[in-house]
Length: 294
Image (cartoon, rainbow, N blue to C red):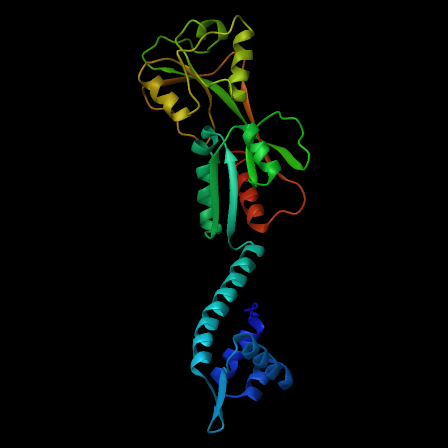
């Protein structure tokens, strides 16, 4: 059987509800011959009569009742689909796919999600843990909508990359260590270290920082999960270098935090595809830009 259009099913349901071709034509704002044509087309496709006249009122046949029952569900689903899409077009709902590193997700994204949930509770943000290069690749191929990435980055065709925030990198050390007030590369190189692995921009920055006063030290362990690194620092396993956002609470009392000399900064940017941006994505971008100074 060929496909049945929703318009014809809507006409059939209207006739069943109103009991009249003429009344259905009036309610649907159709010409009476068009209503008759819709029913004739449905009956031809089904291969059976769908309606009959009883005491001056149009009634569905048994086959017509079956089709009408299914038609109501189909029309309801179609109306709901259009309503859902319209809400997304208006920015009232939608799904936004965001990629960022573990540190950004742990320390910054929760603030954004809290604000977004308060103002736009029907926008669903799906967060993926990715490196900056993975994020840029997925933005370029369309499988992500927004990325929080380390800067600087080379331009990527089709993507907009803008600076977002700049946070100091600090030394996190076991509190029981006898630590100087300011941490230098030469002093820290002589301590057991827990560092990010070399897939991250922070790792490369830290390597350059150490190289300013001597060779690159060998860490005891390399991880990309900042909370796990801090737990190891608290346990006395070693020291680390990590960004510290102003909005982040101070570390627990088993960890001492010290500034670096020379200073080191972690710079982040926000990337998204160029051109028109969906309203739901715009709302998430607005919330992220609101965290620029936190």
